[in-house]
Length: 221
Length: 230
Image (cartoon, rainbow over all chains, first blue to last red; front, side, top):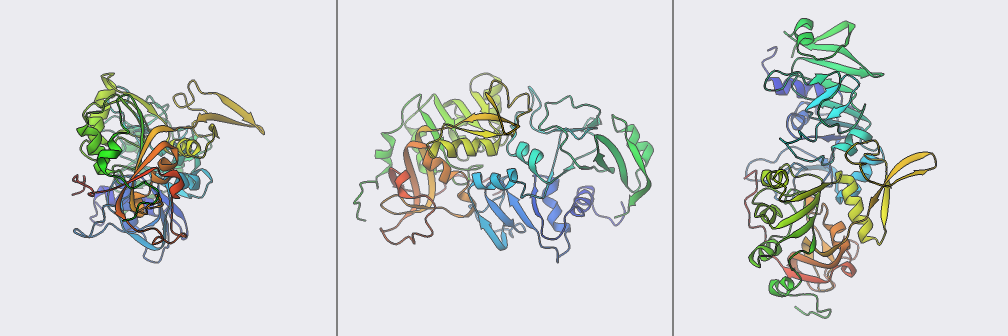
């Protein structure tokens, strides 16, 4: 395992490479919430939350939580210099108006064309779409962070989603525990591998065709 | 405290405005910013068959979740119910109807209701099988939109950090969330406030919800549930 960081943090570290100075970024719950830990200190970013925060900072230390300062998942956060609060309608205005440059979110399935399915498993799991549709449809760039297969080993990257879609052809990049794919003009390109995983393994665990870049990057961290 | 507008009241007086089968809109996001004493009052009075409108169904014992978990809602209009598994069970068993609205569309429907408008036009979900189903569409300047109807409620309940006797409200950090929108969309709006301060002590520049939208102010005992992160 490279430098010895765990799989979730490897994925989060790779996702942090998508973030550039000055961006407005919305993070989903789960692995995406680890991304800020991997940003270089000098990178100034405004993290946006759907409940009405721009400029979220690190998690508070235990005992210093403020029950009225939480992210969209209901967990305590802090704010950085330059932060602001707004109501949820304004927070979504920022998304629809294209002011959120990047969203990093989890998913149940992603198709070859970049269709996103992450809001419902009919008859099993009925969370609702929350703000995922607005983010998927309107964020400047959509990055999916998810395990390559589900807990039964079934591929989550598929030719066509079997689960109801959140939004069509919206995903730009998929980062899994094995590899990184980019979606380009409706098709999938394998661009990076997390060491020691191989193209053979990725092919076996991916339920659709994809092309491979010539100079594939091997991520060693 | 002087009460020149007659808006400051006790919880018991607020309770006169709740009845079975009513439409009730609530502020809050994952329970943060939901009014604890009003929610408990509704439970104690045994109000049932509520049509609830709000961002989500909280957690089982947090926020509006307390009402949902006890089967007191016949219908919920929300964007998310995942943090309250009981809501999902009630929905699956057909004991509670759930109308899902994308979060930003829902807040805008509530805002439109509060602003006295009939609907909004949005392209969120315009090609989406589930969201677009049964909705009127409109082509405007060559672009396709869904018509999403405005939402109002018989009573709105909100949670504020500070209120003055006119009902001017200030919220606390991310506990603002849907509260200013919900406050505008109630035919009768009740604000539960952590602190009620004398008239003139709030800076007019800092007021988020003008008291014009607020009909009643009650003092709050503060959050009485344990948060998921605790």
